[in-house]
Image 1 (cartoon, helix red, strand yellow):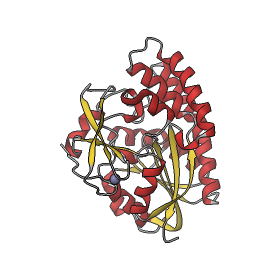
Image 2 (cartoon, rainbow, N blue to C red):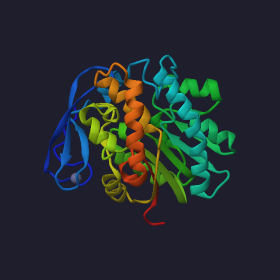
Image 3 (cartoon, rainbow, N blue to C red):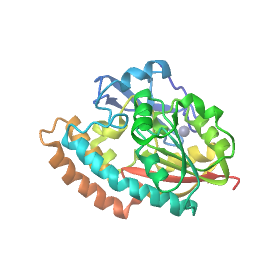
Image 4 (cartoon, rainbow, N blue to C red):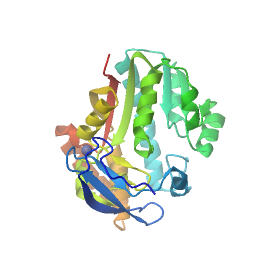
Length: 298
Ligand SMILES: [Zn+2]
């Protein structure tokens, strides 16, 4: 078990339990979320260490790592994914100013995003911890995907762009992965990091039922302010923020399910639409954020 006695972002020792969350997805175990009094960073406290963490991912339903399409929620997720893949390709092209280049996707899962980038003309490299997801990406899309341990073997200064779509919050040592990203980027290269937003309208509404707390798989619960501080501490600067507008629908349906609602799809969609409309005027309160980062010395 990992016990934090100081804030993982600013090292302040004044941390206190904010509230408790249940692992609604798999084990029903309860975990504490702690918050730093100085910078406001929220994180999962007393969480399993890396060796123990594997069992919290052992489910066929873990959609990020499998490609299940058994339920309506899974189907909706996959339709949205299709639309979002196109948007992500456009975002990378526009933000890097490149029509082709070298891209590294850390935590590439089953490889859908990398496959889209490959089809758009990019040279792609994938890193993925799950053997099952790696095999899928290799057999379905003919992608070369390596285990997380192989990041250290990649050549320095070789990538125009590095992406992490809802991945950093799973890493036990997020500062180390940021350091590796800094090493791997070409001068002037771009990092794109997508994360759930713990300061979103839906997080405030669902509180400990908010599906994107997803304890203990999600260890760090960033918001635009705390992520900016973390990025600076890692030698990066956030140059722009975007949103992932559809995530709120998936998260709200799942949160309604966790609350025991008998019609989670309908209620979730109605409430998500309200959260979504409100976030059009307050982007920083969207369910998910995309942060575009460059190294601070560029
Ligand atoms: Zn702090």
